[in-house]
Length: 269
Image (cartoon, rainbow, N blue to C red; front, side, top):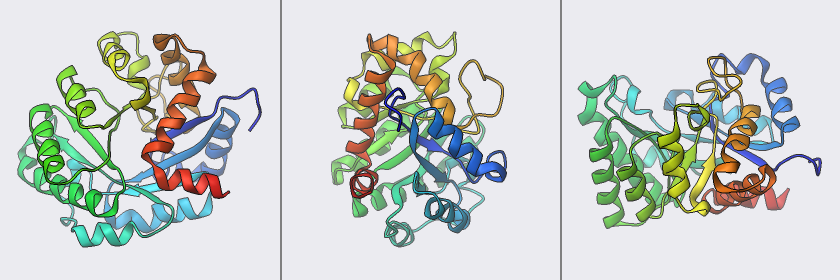
């Protein structure tokens, strides 16, 4: 990495999606040119896990996680703890999910979403790998189920693309979880969200793109990609009174603390 570039990680992207997959080498090259040296690509339907795994195996900068997205929970076979634990044996596999609750469009499947979430929590507990949570319009149930799991057995967790309310943020932080900052936080009208992040401990924040979605300015409304995490970092660093390099270093250290398997792979490289 050039000493003039920040040391950034895109902790959540979807490199297997058709918006990005056809030009993957170029996408990864642009990420590295922006200082984004590691990416976690997320499998949202377990039947696609082999393709996502292949991406991580082919590119040393890429790790992966797998789970059943809550919006797909009613359409996909219910995952089992045994199945998730088996997938987690792969050395490039670094997290369980994304899983969670989404009542915005799919509230009719809330019961199966909650069952799926509990299965993923148990898999995170069994493997010691962090849980990756998607939460939308379900703050109360999300807090209750996460706390219920924590009361049984501790586990690590990141609230991916956090855009919920301050109460869920506080509850997640109290449980020792991390909040992940996406391009939404860089939108001009997202001051309330920036305030939530500003109130959080700096050592509990991660960066992500959720690409190909949610591109930050100046690319808002266009296809997102891992390189653009640098724009989100540039927009957020002043919120904490930090330079881009300082904010990048802190969020990367946070990533390494949570995603221990990715940290060990980096150290061994």
